[in-house]
Length: 274
Image (cartoon, rainbow, N blue to C red; front, side, top):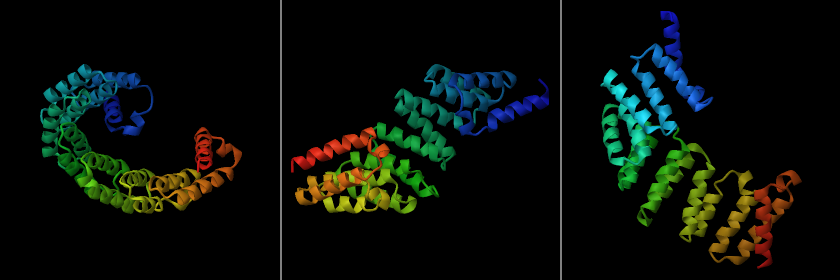
């Protein structure tokens, strides 16, 4: 292989974005990296990429063997700590993963991926408050955080008990204000407030959904469930009737989907009992 062709091959392997690498069979991608490594056995980042693929394949020995090579070739490459920490997390070796992530974040404190992974490790180690602190930092630093970060933080806070409910709901509120009416965030807030018996608060959250959703059969039925759980039978009945009417107004193709047939059966049964 000429020097020019080798350089082009390395550029392709090292510079390809993650979505491009996500296409094709996992084993084929490993074989492609095998070829790249054979052409450039001293290139540490190729081993890092292959370690990540071996991790996806759940071949821990092969992944860790590649990390060991990276450490020999590039002892100061901080990303090796992150990659190994991800493997140790998957193996359930959380103490080792935490030590590696502490080292990685000392070198690269702005790494959102590092903080998210450490939050998961800390939570697994029984230190949810520290996990929340890492996710707080990720959310605060991101111009537009992923809704998943808000959800992950909220679920940890929920597991911490009622003393953290205010913080949980404030975080979901922040997410909706920053990102718009993300259904998953609102859904969790409704679930939390309804479970506490706070029907009005749950309904206020429901009303933050896009208007089209608020008027959909599924969310009208959810409104009825909130009323029913609060002992407000007449209001629940009205909401269930509205949900059934919204279902009946749908075109047959949409109405006959399995989840809507199940909802219709439930609504008719519930209304028959009232």
